[in-house]
Image (cartoon, rainbow, N blue to C red):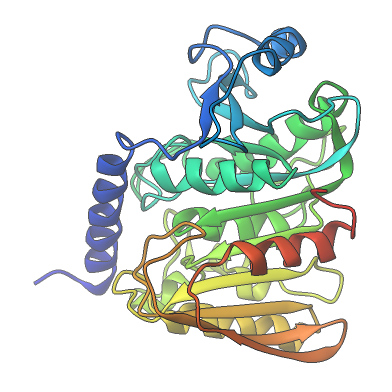
Length: 343
């Protein structure tokens, strides 16, 4: 009989398999500026200008443009990132940014899978500079995976800041988001110290701090899945790798999205994360989507949603008869990153 942690891993891998199947179905309104891996960031202005000169049909009024497989780690690393930009925007005008981190049970998944591409394109169409990154993958007992996976995601934030001029990015307004395993990584990037925390770099010249976090049905406490251990870590090291232990009043606001039909990561995980944020005095919103499964983008299969939390020190409560999460997500980002964000 499988132990609880193995059942969790099996479920996450099954979810990842479903995502991999979805990668063949590209989200609508995404236009590649160049074939993946054939162009670098220095070519972005020319490629973007050329794209603006092309005709787009009336049924695609708001496409997102993507430049794929850009290098952001050392040359010996195979992991890459994708850049998403709004059609028609001026690269000389600074806009806020979002880093999206894919899921896949920490052992699989890709930056271009359906969910990542769909969320990234939606946010880019709203005016955000969006990056979707890969990170080191591996089983729980594989050396060199933890905390390098967290470090890789921090490196993507630093890459965004270092290249803010080329991206038309406001380096002071960056959020991090992720789904499932990516939700955990987003929380760790957003809540733990970017120099002394897990995957931090005390020698880094560029900050990896962010101004907002979006956790989509993330695994936030491995011990509550029955093993009492965090992947690849000793008992003495575990506490720092649980996002609920990283909460403090200086943390950026957090938006949590989770479905009631999630059979892979229990809704309780997100509820407990919200409790930890509340105790620390951190602005947060928990949006529970009725009948939504584990894996969804901003357009989940569901019936409705309810929001609870604390915003600017005051209780927040809202609900919608529509399961779509686009508006509530954009409102959160614009509030956290500035009223002009994404406009």
